[in-house]
Length: 476
Image 1 (cartoon, helix red, strand yellow):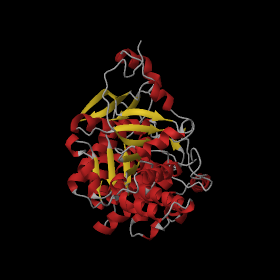
Image 2 (cartoon, helix red, strand yellow):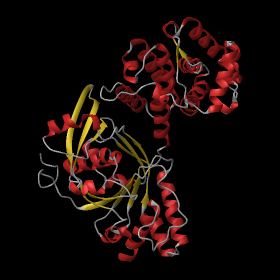
Image 3 (cartoon, helix red, strand yellow):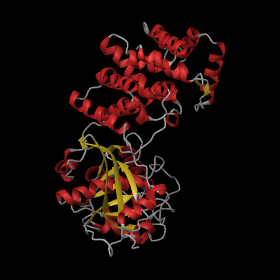
Image 4 (cartoon, one colour):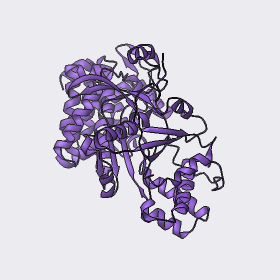
Protein backbone atom coordinates (compact mmCIF):
# COMPACT_ATOMS: atom_id res chain seq x y z
CA UNK A 1 0.00 0.00 0.00
CA UNK A 2 1.33 3.46 -0.96
CA UNK A 3 2.38 5.95 1.69
CA UNK A 4 0.76 9.38 1.41
CA UNK A 5 3.11 11.84 -0.31
CA UNK A 6 3.22 14.16 -3.30
CA UNK A 7 4.25 11.36 -5.65
CA UNK A 8 1.25 9.20 -4.81
CA UNK A 9 -1.36 11.92 -4.22
CA UNK A 10 -2.21 15.07 -6.17
CA UNK A 11 -1.40 18.12 -4.06
CA UNK A 12 -0.92 21.83 -4.62
CA UNK A 13 2.24 23.86 -4.18
CA UNK A 14 2.00 27.30 -2.59
CA UNK A 15 4.24 30.31 -2.04
CA UNK A 16 6.00 30.04 1.31
CA UNK A 17 4.39 32.90 3.22
CA UNK A 18 4.05 31.37 6.71
CA UNK A 19 6.63 30.06 9.13
CA UNK A 20 5.11 27.85 11.81
CA UNK A 21 6.71 26.88 15.09
CA UNK A 22 5.10 23.58 16.05
CA UNK A 23 4.04 20.51 14.11
CA UNK A 24 1.72 18.87 16.61
CA UNK A 25 -1.84 17.67 16.25
CA UNK A 26 -3.49 20.92 17.30
CA UNK A 27 -1.93 23.23 14.72
CA UNK A 28 -2.40 20.68 11.96
CA UNK A 29 -6.10 20.27 12.80
CA UNK A 30 -6.67 23.95 13.47
CA UNK A 31 -4.51 26.62 11.81
CA UNK A 32 -3.26 24.45 8.93
CA UNK A 33 -6.80 23.36 8.10
CA UNK A 34 -7.93 26.98 7.94
CA UNK A 35 -4.98 27.92 5.73
CA UNK A 36 -5.86 24.94 3.51
CA UNK A 37 -9.45 26.17 3.22
CA UNK A 38 -8.37 29.73 2.40
CA UNK A 39 -5.95 28.43 -0.21
CA UNK A 40 -8.74 26.41 -1.84
CA UNK A 41 -11.55 28.92 -1.60
CA UNK A 42 -9.91 32.35 -1.65
CA UNK A 43 -6.59 31.92 -3.49
CA UNK A 44 -4.69 32.76 -0.31
CA UNK A 45 -1.58 31.10 -1.82
CA UNK A 46 -0.02 30.58 1.59
CA UNK A 47 2.49 27.77 1.96
CA UNK A 48 3.73 26.83 5.41
CA UNK A 49 7.30 26.09 6.47
CA UNK A 50 7.15 24.13 9.71
CA UNK A 51 9.89 24.53 12.31
CA UNK A 52 10.30 21.91 15.01
CA UNK A 53 10.47 23.97 18.22
CA UNK A 54 12.14 21.33 20.40
CA UNK A 55 14.75 18.68 19.72
CA UNK A 56 12.30 15.78 19.42
CA UNK A 57 9.33 16.04 17.07
CA UNK A 58 7.50 15.01 13.92
CA UNK A 59 9.48 16.87 11.25
CA UNK A 60 10.98 13.70 9.78
CA UNK A 61 7.54 12.09 9.46
CA UNK A 62 6.20 15.27 7.86
CA UNK A 63 9.03 15.40 5.35
CA UNK A 64 8.62 11.70 4.57
CA UNK A 65 5.04 12.54 3.53
CA UNK A 66 6.02 15.82 1.80
CA UNK A 67 3.99 17.77 4.37
CA UNK A 68 0.74 15.95 3.55
CA UNK A 69 -1.59 14.39 6.09
CA UNK A 70 -5.25 13.45 6.40
CA UNK A 71 -7.54 15.40 8.71
CA UNK A 72 -10.81 13.89 9.95
CA UNK A 73 -13.40 16.34 11.28
CA UNK A 74 -16.05 14.60 13.36
CA UNK A 75 -19.01 16.21 15.06
CA UNK A 76 -22.27 18.09 14.71
CA UNK A 77 -22.44 20.23 11.57
CA UNK A 78 -25.63 22.02 10.55
CA UNK A 79 -27.52 19.91 13.08
CA UNK A 80 -26.24 16.57 11.75
CA UNK A 81 -23.53 14.21 12.99
CA UNK A 82 -20.90 14.26 10.26
CA UNK A 83 -17.47 12.69 9.76
CA UNK A 84 -15.49 14.03 6.82
CA UNK A 85 -11.85 13.96 5.81
CA UNK A 86 -9.46 15.79 3.50
CA UNK A 87 -5.76 15.75 2.65
CA UNK A 88 -4.20 18.99 3.92
CA UNK A 89 -1.49 20.27 1.55
CA UNK A 90 -0.48 23.73 2.82
CA UNK A 91 2.76 22.52 4.50
CA UNK A 92 5.50 22.76 1.89
CA UNK A 93 8.48 21.59 3.93
CA UNK A 94 9.64 21.13 7.51
CA UNK A 95 12.89 22.00 9.25
CA UNK A 96 14.59 20.72 12.38
CA UNK A 97 16.77 23.66 13.48
CA UNK A 98 18.68 21.37 15.82
CA UNK A 99 19.97 19.51 12.75
CA UNK A 100 20.05 22.33 10.19
CA UNK A 101 20.05 25.77 11.78
CA UNK A 102 21.29 27.38 8.58
CA UNK A 103 18.19 26.22 6.72
CA UNK A 104 16.03 27.59 9.51
CA UNK A 105 17.64 31.02 9.52
CA UNK A 106 17.51 31.22 5.71
CA UNK A 107 13.73 31.67 5.99
CA UNK A 108 14.43 35.21 7.13
CA UNK A 109 15.70 36.00 3.62
CA UNK A 110 12.43 34.99 1.95
CA UNK A 111 10.82 38.23 0.66
CA UNK A 112 7.37 36.55 0.56
CA UNK A 113 7.35 35.61 4.24
CA UNK A 114 4.53 37.42 6.04
CA UNK A 115 3.15 35.39 8.96
CA UNK A 116 4.44 33.54 12.01
CA UNK A 117 2.17 30.99 13.72
CA UNK A 118 3.13 29.06 16.83
CA UNK A 119 1.95 26.51 19.34
CA UNK A 120 4.86 25.51 21.53
CA UNK A 121 2.78 24.61 24.63
CA UNK A 122 2.02 27.00 27.47
CA UNK A 123 5.66 26.76 28.58
CA UNK A 124 6.94 27.71 25.13
CA UNK A 125 6.58 31.47 25.52
CA UNK A 126 9.29 31.80 28.13
CA UNK A 127 12.56 33.67 28.59
CA UNK A 128 15.77 31.63 28.85
CA UNK A 129 18.59 33.77 30.20
CA UNK A 130 21.24 31.49 28.70
CA UNK A 131 20.04 31.96 25.10
CA UNK A 132 22.51 33.85 22.89
CA UNK A 133 22.27 35.16 19.33
CA UNK A 134 25.22 32.96 18.33
CA UNK A 135 23.48 29.77 19.50
CA UNK A 136 22.53 27.30 16.75
CA UNK A 137 19.74 27.10 17.78
CA UNK A 138 18.59 29.03 20.82
CA UNK A 139 16.80 26.92 23.45
CA UNK A 140 13.59 28.92 23.65
CA UNK A 141 11.01 29.62 20.96
CA UNK A 142 11.18 33.41 21.58
CA UNK A 143 14.96 33.18 21.27
CA UNK A 144 14.72 31.42 17.91
CA UNK A 145 12.13 33.96 16.73
CA UNK A 146 14.28 36.91 17.79
CA UNK A 147 17.24 35.50 15.83
CA UNK A 148 15.02 35.06 12.76
CA UNK A 149 13.61 38.57 13.02
CA UNK A 150 17.07 40.09 13.45
CA UNK A 151 18.35 38.22 10.40
CA UNK A 152 15.36 39.53 8.43
CA UNK A 153 15.99 43.06 9.68
CA UNK A 154 19.60 42.84 8.50
CA UNK A 155 18.75 41.19 5.17
CA UNK A 156 16.24 43.84 4.11
CA UNK A 157 17.83 46.84 5.80
CA UNK A 158 14.94 47.33 8.19
CA UNK A 159 12.41 47.72 5.36
CA UNK A 160 8.98 48.48 6.81
CA UNK A 161 7.21 46.14 4.38
CA UNK A 162 9.27 43.15 5.51
CA UNK A 163 7.86 43.05 9.02
CA UNK A 164 5.84 39.98 10.05
CA UNK A 165 2.43 39.34 11.55
CA UNK A 166 2.95 37.04 14.56
CA UNK A 167 -0.05 34.95 15.62
CA UNK A 168 0.79 32.69 18.60
CA UNK A 169 -1.70 30.01 19.64
CA UNK A 170 -0.23 29.08 23.03
CA UNK A 171 -2.86 28.81 25.74
CA UNK A 172 -1.76 31.72 27.91
CA UNK A 173 -3.42 35.06 28.43
CA UNK A 174 -2.08 37.88 26.22
CA UNK A 175 0.13 35.40 24.34
CA UNK A 176 1.15 37.93 21.68
CA UNK A 177 1.98 40.65 24.19
CA UNK A 178 4.05 38.23 26.27
CA UNK A 179 5.92 36.93 23.22
CA UNK A 180 6.75 40.46 22.03
CA UNK A 181 7.95 41.42 25.52
CA UNK A 182 10.43 38.53 25.53
CA UNK A 183 11.62 39.29 21.98
CA UNK A 184 12.36 42.86 23.08
CA UNK A 185 14.11 41.53 26.17
CA UNK A 186 16.43 39.45 23.97
CA UNK A 187 16.97 42.44 21.69
CA UNK A 188 18.17 44.44 24.68
CA UNK A 189 20.30 41.66 26.17
CA UNK A 190 21.90 40.85 22.81
CA UNK A 191 22.55 44.53 22.06
CA UNK A 192 20.73 44.37 18.72
CA UNK A 193 20.33 48.13 18.59
CA UNK A 194 17.66 50.76 18.74
CA UNK A 195 16.86 50.56 15.02
CA UNK A 196 15.95 46.88 15.37
CA UNK A 197 13.77 47.60 18.41
CA UNK A 198 12.02 50.37 16.49
CA UNK A 199 11.46 47.98 13.55
CA UNK A 200 9.95 45.40 15.89
CA UNK A 201 7.63 47.99 17.43
CA UNK A 202 6.63 49.80 14.25
CA UNK A 203 6.66 47.20 11.48
CA UNK A 204 5.82 43.86 13.14
CA UNK A 205 2.44 42.97 14.61
CA UNK A 206 2.09 40.63 17.59
CA UNK A 207 -1.51 39.46 17.96
CA UNK A 208 -3.17 38.10 21.08
CA UNK A 209 -5.35 35.10 20.32
CA UNK A 210 -7.96 32.74 21.67
CA UNK A 211 -8.13 29.30 20.07
CA UNK A 212 -10.85 26.69 20.45
CA UNK A 213 -11.17 23.27 18.86
CA UNK A 214 -11.06 19.85 20.51
CA UNK A 215 -8.34 17.80 18.81
CA UNK A 216 -8.17 14.19 20.04
CA UNK A 217 -5.14 13.69 17.80
CA UNK A 218 -3.86 10.53 16.18
CA UNK A 219 -6.64 7.87 16.24
CA UNK A 220 -4.38 4.96 17.02
CA UNK A 221 -7.16 2.54 17.94
CA UNK A 222 -8.98 3.17 14.63
CA UNK A 223 -6.05 3.23 12.21
CA UNK A 224 -6.66 -0.17 10.64
CA UNK A 225 -10.19 0.85 9.62
CA UNK A 226 -9.04 4.33 8.56
CA UNK A 227 -6.24 2.93 6.40
CA UNK A 228 -8.67 0.56 4.72
CA UNK A 229 -11.05 3.43 4.06
CA UNK A 230 -8.37 5.76 2.69
CA UNK A 231 -6.53 3.21 0.58
CA UNK A 232 -3.13 4.62 1.56
CA UNK A 233 -0.89 4.66 4.61
CA UNK A 234 -0.74 7.90 6.58
CA UNK A 235 1.34 8.10 9.73
CA UNK A 236 0.07 11.59 10.52
CA UNK A 237 -3.71 11.21 10.50
CA UNK A 238 -5.27 13.64 12.94
CA UNK A 239 -8.82 13.96 14.25
CA UNK A 240 -10.60 17.14 15.31
CA UNK A 241 -14.14 18.23 16.07
CA UNK A 242 -16.22 20.20 13.59
CA UNK A 243 -16.39 23.32 15.76
CA UNK A 244 -13.58 25.85 15.48
CA UNK A 245 -13.01 29.37 16.75
CA UNK A 246 -9.97 31.60 16.33
CA UNK A 247 -10.19 35.05 17.91
CA UNK A 248 -7.36 37.30 16.73
CA UNK A 249 -6.80 40.61 18.48
CA UNK A 250 -4.96 43.12 16.33
CA UNK A 251 -5.27 46.08 14.00
CA UNK A 252 -7.69 46.11 11.07
CA UNK A 253 -4.77 45.47 8.71
CA UNK A 254 -4.54 41.87 9.94
CA UNK A 255 -8.12 41.16 8.93
CA UNK A 256 -7.47 42.64 5.49
CA UNK A 257 -4.66 40.15 4.84
CA UNK A 258 -6.47 36.98 5.96
CA UNK A 259 -9.48 36.05 3.74
CA UNK A 260 -11.36 34.15 6.44
CA UNK A 261 -14.73 35.75 5.85
CA UNK A 262 -14.82 34.69 2.20
CA UNK A 263 -14.44 31.07 3.30
CA UNK A 264 -17.00 31.07 6.10
CA UNK A 265 -14.34 30.36 8.71
CA UNK A 266 -15.09 31.16 12.34
CA UNK A 267 -12.18 33.57 12.70
CA UNK A 268 -13.05 36.69 14.68
CA UNK A 269 -10.87 39.77 14.22
CA UNK A 270 -11.19 42.26 17.04
CA UNK A 271 -9.35 45.04 18.87
CA UNK A 272 -10.48 43.57 22.21
CA UNK A 273 -10.67 39.83 22.73
CA UNK A 274 -11.63 39.92 26.41
CA UNK A 275 -15.40 39.60 25.78
CA UNK A 276 -14.69 36.46 23.75
CA UNK A 277 -12.41 35.01 26.40
CA UNK A 278 -15.05 35.72 29.03
CA UNK A 279 -17.73 34.17 26.82
CA UNK A 280 -15.70 30.98 26.43
CA UNK A 281 -14.86 30.69 30.13
CA UNK A 282 -18.41 31.46 31.33
CA UNK A 283 -20.42 29.48 28.75
CA UNK A 284 -18.21 26.60 27.56
CA UNK A 285 -16.09 25.98 30.64
CA UNK A 286 -18.78 27.17 33.03
CA UNK A 287 -21.36 24.83 31.55
CA UNK A 288 -18.94 21.91 31.83
CA UNK A 289 -18.27 22.67 35.48
CA UNK A 290 -21.95 23.27 36.29
CA UNK A 291 -22.91 19.98 34.65
CA UNK A 292 -20.39 17.61 36.23
CA UNK A 293 -21.76 17.17 39.79
CA UNK A 294 -25.39 17.34 38.67
CA UNK A 295 -25.07 14.82 35.84
CA UNK A 296 -22.81 12.46 37.74
CA UNK A 297 -24.95 12.33 40.87
CA UNK A 298 -28.00 11.89 38.63
CA UNK A 299 -26.41 8.61 37.54
CA UNK A 300 -24.99 9.62 34.16
CA UNK A 301 -21.34 9.04 33.25
CA UNK A 302 -20.77 10.90 29.96
CA UNK A 303 -21.20 14.49 28.82
CA UNK A 304 -23.10 13.48 25.69
CA UNK A 305 -25.55 11.33 27.64
CA UNK A 306 -26.14 14.22 30.02
CA UNK A 307 -27.12 16.57 27.21
CA UNK A 308 -29.39 13.97 25.64
CA UNK A 309 -31.18 13.37 28.95
CA UNK A 310 -34.37 15.44 29.04
CA UNK A 311 -34.01 16.49 32.68
CA UNK A 312 -30.25 17.01 32.98
CA UNK A 313 -29.95 18.46 29.49
CA UNK A 314 -32.86 20.77 30.17
CA UNK A 315 -31.26 21.93 33.40
CA UNK A 316 -28.01 22.82 31.64
CA UNK A 317 -29.71 24.60 28.74
CA UNK A 318 -31.74 26.72 31.15
CA UNK A 319 -28.61 27.51 33.19
CA UNK A 320 -26.77 28.66 30.06
CA UNK A 321 -29.49 30.66 28.34
CA UNK A 322 -31.26 32.07 31.41
CA UNK A 323 -28.47 32.55 33.96
CA UNK A 324 -25.08 32.68 32.21
CA UNK A 325 -25.81 34.53 28.95
CA UNK A 326 -27.55 37.46 30.71
CA UNK A 327 -24.26 38.20 32.51
CA UNK A 328 -22.32 38.78 29.28
CA UNK A 329 -22.00 41.88 27.12
CA UNK A 330 -21.87 40.48 23.59
CA UNK A 331 -24.99 40.59 21.41
CA UNK A 332 -27.79 38.13 22.13
CA UNK A 333 -27.35 36.69 18.65
CA UNK A 334 -23.65 35.97 19.25
CA UNK A 335 -24.29 34.50 22.70
CA UNK A 336 -27.18 32.32 21.50
CA UNK A 337 -25.16 30.96 18.59
CA UNK A 338 -22.12 30.24 20.73
CA UNK A 339 -24.33 28.52 23.32
CA UNK A 340 -25.96 26.35 20.67
CA UNK A 341 -22.51 25.45 19.34
CA UNK A 342 -21.41 24.50 22.85
CA UNK A 343 -24.38 22.16 23.29
CA UNK A 344 -23.67 20.60 19.89
CA UNK A 345 -20.08 20.05 20.96
CA UNK A 346 -21.23 18.42 24.18
CA UNK A 347 -23.44 16.00 22.26
CA UNK A 348 -20.80 15.12 19.67
CA UNK A 349 -21.21 11.34 19.17
CA UNK A 350 -17.59 11.00 18.03
CA UNK A 351 -16.15 12.30 21.31
CA UNK A 352 -16.88 10.68 24.65
CA UNK A 353 -16.01 12.81 27.67
CA UNK A 354 -16.42 11.13 31.04
CA UNK A 355 -17.88 13.45 33.66
CA UNK A 356 -15.60 12.02 36.32
CA UNK A 357 -12.51 12.79 34.22
CA UNK A 358 -13.40 16.50 34.04
CA UNK A 359 -14.25 16.72 37.75
CA UNK A 360 -10.61 17.40 38.64
CA UNK A 361 -10.23 20.43 40.92
CA UNK A 362 -13.92 21.25 40.72
CA UNK A 363 -13.82 23.81 43.52
CA UNK A 364 -11.24 26.02 41.81
CA UNK A 365 -13.02 25.52 38.48
CA UNK A 366 -16.31 26.67 39.99
CA UNK A 367 -14.59 29.77 41.38
CA UNK A 368 -13.09 30.83 38.03
CA UNK A 369 -15.74 29.56 35.61
CA UNK A 370 -19.13 29.76 37.36
CA UNK A 371 -18.92 32.05 40.38
CA UNK A 372 -18.32 35.16 38.20
CA UNK A 373 -21.66 34.42 36.47
CA UNK A 374 -23.36 34.00 39.84
CA UNK A 375 -22.05 37.31 41.15
CA UNK A 376 -22.74 39.20 37.92
CA UNK A 377 -26.27 37.78 37.72
CA UNK A 378 -26.99 38.99 41.25
CA UNK A 379 -25.55 42.39 40.40
CA UNK A 380 -27.60 42.81 37.23
CA UNK A 381 -30.85 41.11 38.25
CA UNK A 382 -30.89 41.68 42.00
CA UNK A 383 -31.92 38.05 42.44
CA UNK A 384 -30.20 34.70 42.84
CA UNK A 385 -29.42 32.38 39.87
CA UNK A 386 -31.23 29.28 41.12
CA UNK A 387 -29.72 26.72 38.72
CA UNK A 388 -26.12 27.85 39.17
CA UNK A 389 -26.61 27.68 42.94
CA UNK A 390 -28.18 24.24 42.59
CA UNK A 391 -24.97 23.25 40.81
CA UNK A 392 -22.97 24.65 43.74
CA UNK A 393 -25.04 22.58 46.16
CA UNK A 394 -24.47 19.56 43.91
CA UNK A 395 -20.75 20.24 44.03
CA UNK A 396 -20.79 20.14 47.83
CA UNK A 397 -22.79 16.90 47.67
CA UNK A 398 -20.34 15.48 45.11
CA UNK A 399 -17.48 15.99 47.58
CA UNK A 400 -19.25 13.71 50.03
CA UNK A 401 -17.68 11.03 47.84
CA UNK A 402 -20.74 8.84 47.43
CA UNK A 403 -23.04 8.08 44.50
CA UNK A 404 -25.90 5.80 45.41
CA UNK A 405 -23.70 3.87 47.81
CA UNK A 406 -20.69 3.64 45.49
CA UNK A 407 -17.55 5.63 46.34
CA UNK A 408 -16.53 8.53 44.06
CA UNK A 409 -12.86 8.92 43.20
CA UNK A 410 -12.33 12.55 44.15
CA UNK A 411 -9.39 14.46 42.67
CA UNK A 412 -8.51 17.87 44.04
CA UNK A 413 -5.90 19.65 46.11
CA UNK A 414 -5.34 17.68 49.30
CA UNK A 415 -6.39 20.66 51.39
CA UNK A 416 -9.77 20.72 49.62
CA UNK A 417 -10.22 16.97 50.04
CA UNK A 418 -9.32 17.21 53.73
CA UNK A 419 -11.76 20.08 54.22
CA UNK A 420 -14.71 18.21 52.70
CA UNK A 421 -13.82 14.96 54.49
CA UNK A 422 -13.87 16.77 57.82
CA UNK A 423 -17.13 18.55 57.02
CA UNK A 424 -19.00 15.48 55.82
CA UNK A 425 -17.79 13.55 58.87
CA UNK A 426 -20.04 15.82 60.94
CA UNK A 427 -23.16 14.90 58.97
CA UNK A 428 -24.75 18.30 59.64
CA UNK A 429 -25.86 19.60 56.26
CA UNK A 430 -26.49 23.17 57.34
CA UNK A 431 -23.07 23.43 59.00
CA UNK A 432 -21.43 21.86 55.93
CA UNK A 433 -23.08 24.38 53.61
CA UNK A 434 -22.14 27.31 55.84
CA UNK A 435 -18.52 26.19 56.26
CA UNK A 436 -18.12 25.64 52.52
CA UNK A 437 -19.69 28.90 51.42
CA UNK A 438 -17.72 30.94 53.95
CA UNK A 439 -14.41 29.31 52.99
CA UNK A 440 -12.43 32.27 51.68
CA UNK A 441 -9.64 29.95 50.53
CA UNK A 442 -12.11 28.51 48.01
CA UNK A 443 -13.90 31.62 46.80
CA UNK A 444 -11.75 34.58 47.89
CA UNK A 445 -14.90 35.94 49.50
CA UNK A 446 -17.46 34.91 52.10
CA UNK A 447 -20.49 33.84 50.06
CA UNK A 448 -22.69 33.65 53.15
CA UNK A 449 -22.69 37.45 53.17
CA UNK A 450 -24.83 37.49 50.01
CA UNK A 451 -28.47 37.75 51.05
CA UNK A 452 -30.36 34.50 50.60
CA UNK A 453 -27.47 32.54 49.09
CA UNK A 454 -26.72 30.36 52.13
CA UNK A 455 -30.39 29.48 52.58
CA UNK A 456 -30.84 28.65 48.89
CA UNK A 457 -27.77 26.42 48.66
CA UNK A 458 -28.59 24.73 51.98
CA UNK A 459 -32.12 23.92 50.87
CA UNK A 460 -30.84 22.45 47.61
CA UNK A 461 -28.21 20.44 49.44
CA UNK A 462 -30.71 19.05 51.93
CA UNK A 463 -33.00 18.06 49.08
CA UNK A 464 -30.18 16.29 47.22
CA UNK A 465 -28.91 14.39 50.26
CA UNK A 466 -32.33 13.55 51.70
CA UNK A 467 -34.23 12.64 48.53
CA UNK A 468 -31.50 12.00 45.95
CA UNK A 469 -30.39 13.94 42.87
CA UNK A 470 -33.21 12.72 40.62
CA UNK A 471 -35.92 13.94 42.96
CA UNK A 472 -34.08 17.21 43.69
CA UNK A 473 -33.45 18.02 40.05
CA UNK A 474 -36.97 17.13 38.95
CA UNK A 475 -38.38 19.35 41.69
CA UNK A 476 -36.13 22.26 40.73
